[in-house]
Amino acid sequence: MKRKILNILTIVAVMAFTQSCSEYLDTPAPTLSDAVFFSNDDAAINALAGAYDPIAWYGDMQVDDWAIGDVTSDDAEKGGENEGDQADIQALATFTANAENGVILGRWQIRYIGINRANKLIEGITDNENISEPLRTRVIAEAKFLRAFYMFELVKVFGGVPIVTKILAPSEYTLPRNTEEECWAQIEQDLKEAIPDLPKKSEVAAEGELGRATWGAAKALLTKAYIFEEKWEEAESAAKEIVASSEYELDPDYGHIFTLDADNGVESVFDIQYGDFGIAGWDRDNEGTTVCIFTRGRDNGGWGFVCPTQDLYDAFEAGDPRREFTIIKEGDVLWEGTPDEEEFYIDAQNPTGYNSRKHILPASQQGEMSEDPLNWHYIRYAEVLLWQAEAAAHLGHDWQTPLNKVRARVGLAPTTETDGLKAVYHERRVELACEAHRYWDVVRTGRGEDILGKFGYTENKKYFLIPQIEMNLNPNLEQNPYNQ
Image (cartoon, rainbow, N blue to C red; front, side):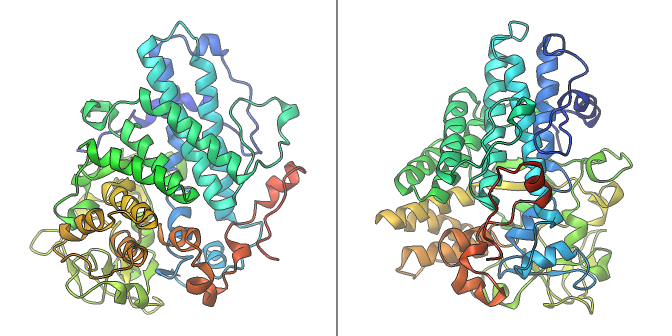
């Protein structure tokens, strides 16, 4: 059963206090003073819900993650009705985006709204005797996890960005960019401070708390940061700690991972939470995800985006069952033998002949307003094992054991590849296909021009352009060399 941190009405109620307007880091005056608002534990929990909320917004994780991670890579083409359908995504895929690109604008603004809300929460309850000490400690830890999460997603896209760890005065709105190294250091600091005060997943109450940050989520995000920083010893050590905790395990059924039953399940380290409350609306007014309608084929009632390429199809080894749970081809029948049985067709506009499968639900489980309740698995345990393998390969340690655990789960024999990095890169591609990881994997490992050069990628395009509206608001921002 899907459980949310707080119901949507509570989240909406707290927005008046925590909402940041669309201009760069601008914070409207609250309707209540901090002393009045943060007057009890319930107020702190309500504000925490507001800090989590931007993670799931339409203009953020629901669109830009697959638009960059999958469509801008060699794993998928945009799809849709034609090239002009979601033109901003097409520009990303062909590396012709400009600073007016709407996808990139959402990535910048929504992440800073999240940082602002985390900062407001930390400032509001630190040393606040109205909030019970155990709750205060945990909520501050969650807020630091969220601040690190939002900062990670900014650095991944833009490189070094302004570090903001407090509510800014108007005179501070024009902060210059920090270096990439300074940003990673802040991410590490927030996560290291959060980890000791967060509960293990096994300690989290099933009712009302599933989906909140845990020790494992923070440790895994720290591991991911180490991977991006190429801190291989630290990454291997952190991944091993997660494995040794026995808090997670591989779902024995790969296909089950992408069902409602697996939301916050045994393999989920951190899920982006979605739900169906039957509330009419769109964008931030509904707590479901639109990934389902975007990726479902046009001839089966969807919009036909994220079309897997032949190259991805061919990357799967013979007999690898992950392919059928990742890619839909003409005539495939899903949910066979149930009332939801459905035959899938490939529409004439589809550029590759394939549709993506992982994020669609049967008709009986779909939500209102084309928004479904299926979680987005931001980090799952298989990725932790592959991080361990990647770090170990760089260090000359045992990379085979964690990697072969991932293969064994789907019935594949141990890899015969003797080059550890080649083995990890292959396994990450097929295990995590169409989960918005491929672009980042290619560029962070220095393979961008070799793999994506034919689409227009150059090393100047590793980081995307800072939105022009933000450049206009803050003259101290230095633009990335994307179009140079």
